Image 1 (cartoon, rainbow, N blue to C red):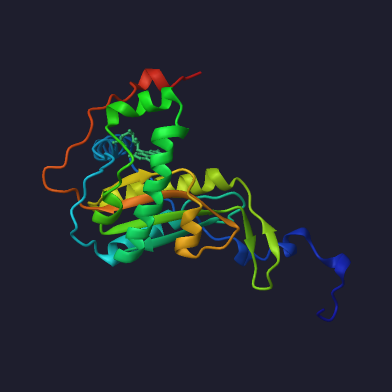
Image 2: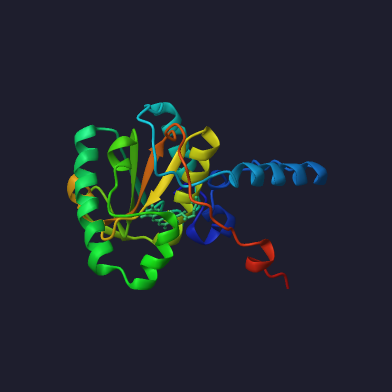
Length: 236
Ligand SMILES: Cc1cc2nc3c(=O)[nH]c(=O)nc-3n(C[C@H](O)[C@H](O)[C@H](O)COP(=O)(O)O)c2cc1C
């Protein structure tokens, strides 16, 4: 403690050293520009579709990394950033993932799925075969960390894990699309096999498997209907 000061001298603001805060970097726009930016972003995002037919063309690592940086900039409960992304390009690992996923999917489509779920999936034309897991150049396995583990092996709490990882995944999907890549959100259920194949620790739960690449020549997507604004928005 410095000469001439005591604990009782400490003013409340001294417990928040100024360097803990910094000026916000905020970019505002005139209203007209806001409007055109908002519509332009919508026009771009509405073209995003889930792709299930991929070209083997490799994707640039630097682009994937930039998109992952976007994902890592997402907000999270108490800033715990409870996510981990495993980027898989190795053909052997992709084959193992495909085999394990197809085993789960066969059980899902033949035994586990309730009739209503199968009916809802029918228009999408999905089935237990997942060739895209090998054909696509890149799989991103997203893990949600139920709790953190520090260097000494001590556990610490994470908050709103699913919400946080879901938001980061949304950022990633938007970033990939914006960069000119296609992806598929894939959820073979259960996905614990991803921990084994990708050697991830028990505090991490597989959240989603993103299949990433370029669409195959002539790729087709199901015709789907999106809800109109008034069907999913209420103003009060
Ligand atoms: C959480 C989640 C899980 C999904 N799981 C699968 C999946 O396992 N297999 C698949 O083919 N599509 C899957 N999808 C993709 C959806 O079927 C697709 O997003 C939906 O039909 C809308 O089509 P669009 O993404 O082209 O707009 C999933 C999507 C989400 C958000």
